[in-house]
Each structure stands twice: as C-alpha cells, then as structure tokens.
Amino acid sequence: MWEWFVSVRVKNHRVSGPMVQEYAKKVTQKLGKTEFKASNIWLGSFRKRHEIVFNKLCGGSSDVNSETIEELVAKLPSIRCFERAGFLLWVKLLLV
Image (cartoon, rainbow, N blue to C red; front, top):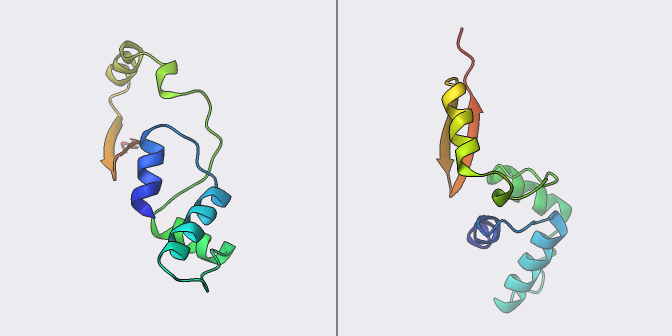
C-alpha cells in the first residue's frame, strides 16, 4: 500500500482517503482476504503509521520555476529541506 501511495504522489497526483481505502480493498481481494473492510479506523492507522496528512493541493510542481526556489532558499537560511520516503519536506528551523 505504501509503495502505491508514494508512486502516485511522486507523479504529483492527488490521493484522497476514499481512494486509499478502495485500492486497499482491491489489493486484499486479489490476495483472497475477503473479510478486509478498509474502514475509517484502518485508514486512520495507515495515515498515522506513515504520517500522511490529506490537504488540498494548490497548483502543481511546475507552477514555480527553479530559479524562484533557489532565490527563496538563498534569502531564508533558516529553512532546510529534508527528504523522507521520496518526498521533500521543508522545515523552518527556529534559531533561538
């Protein structure tokens, strides 16, 4: 499931909770696990385990050119970029 989720997000496609649940049901049915329900509780556990937050996506990765990003990074040295499971996470480090 996680690999599927990452592969979809890397392509910059939107993923919703019901989409994850539907895909999970299809996968488990192919594996012969007909009792699996992909409930909201299961979805919550999946999201928590993988630190997934479903937010609205605004624009796309191609909406901002790389020069703009480089200028921003140069101006804000307190911002660092980390990669986790194929996703770039921007974290503002508060310097005391």
